[in-house]
Image 1 (cartoon, rainbow, N blue to C red):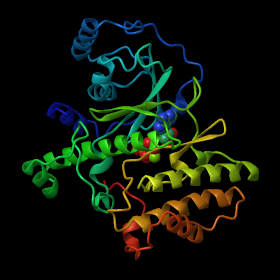
Image 2: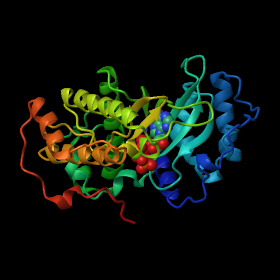
Image 3: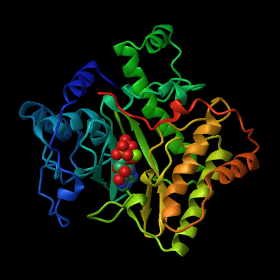
Image 4: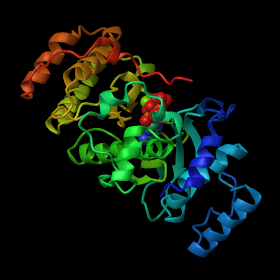
Length: 334
Ligand SMILES: Nc1ncnc2c1ncn2[C@@H]1O[C@H](COP(=O)(O)OP(=O)(O)OP(=O)(O)O)[C@@H](O)[C@H]1O
Ligand SMILES: [Mg+2]
């Protein structure tokens, strides 16, 4: 699904600035009446897109800038044509050089009021310094979620050619989607993933009509609440281990807190401890980051013994640590 044109377009979008975040959006937003408000027939949709291409404009309620709109159309038009959503209401988070998440309006076909669309920028994965740390033992996935076996493609990935980097970009997104689907089926608390491809993932939207759920790092809990939330988080960490997954970037920043419930998000770097030799060190870092938040909330949360006991209880061995330099937070090199 990734046409070269799309990638060229994404490449041109590296330097977008001034995209308003949710904080700049008035709480009560009246949706503009637009041609796409009533669900159009597929012919009408094609006409809308032809018009959009011509006039560079689609009347989504969210007022995207010209370049952002082009990027959104390139990333979401297949989903829109397949009638996964009827409108893009607002930007939830993003606008930088990584992923942006949008609140979309659902419809009769999807039977959900809202959806969240996570849309990726080309830089999101390209400059991860330690990507091999997470990719160890992983197969590369194509845009339909199938293993890439083609020699030319594998070679391009190894050589990190432009083509190889595009394949890797898609592979990260497909890994995120597959991990979310598998863990959701296993009963973990995360937004239900609906569909992936074409540079984006659609999933359940978590939040109120006008306001997305906050991430846990912005929430202050009473000690009693904090105990409950820590229990819930650790229960999910255990579900992940039972399903051979370590999140790999778990912290209060990647947990949504909505009316007393938690939802884990942001899974592209999740690893399989059976094939990744750094799995224990990555797991311990996840637990340490969680403990940082819960300590501030007044709990005695000791990362090392906690990580060790959960890890061993799930039948894993404690393997030698990887070099600490490999475990610095991921930074995008500009
Ligand atoms: N399903 C959802 N419902 C509501 N809000 C969401 C949803 N998924 C993500 N968000 C919001 O979008 C933000 C970014 O999502 P995510 O963490 O998956 O992407 P990211 O690439 O890591 O971005 P960042 O680097 O900003 O964390 C989250 O911090 C959260 O505020
Ligand atoms: Mg995140």
